[in-house]
Image 1 (cartoon, rainbow, N blue to C red):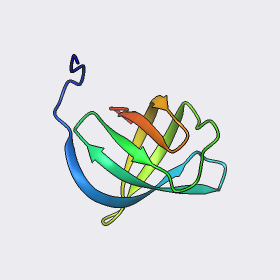
Image 2 (cartoon, helix red, strand yellow; image 1 turned 135 degrees about the vertical axis):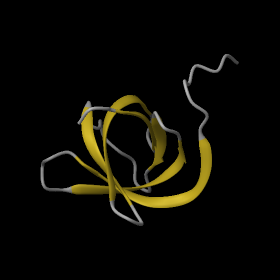
Image 3 (spheres, helix red, strand yellow; image 1 turned 90 degrees about the vertical axis):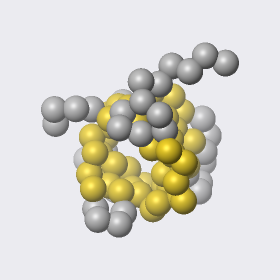
Image 4 (cartoon, rainbow, N blue to C red; image 1 turned 45 degrees about the vertical axis):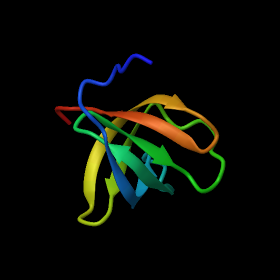
Length: 85
């Protein structure tokens, strides 16, 4: 399999996070792995389509990253961090 990521992802211990799309309702998820350029998110409940762009609040420390959806399955999503926001 050809690796297409620009930076190496680090597997982490499922940090708690939330996806906020500006609708006032945050969707809880876990961060499966993360790199400087993106992350893989895991959802407890099956998700309908996520918005193309959204904010990701990562605990602890409440780090907020703006994200662009790259791919999505029923319980997972791959996101690219948007720089300059």
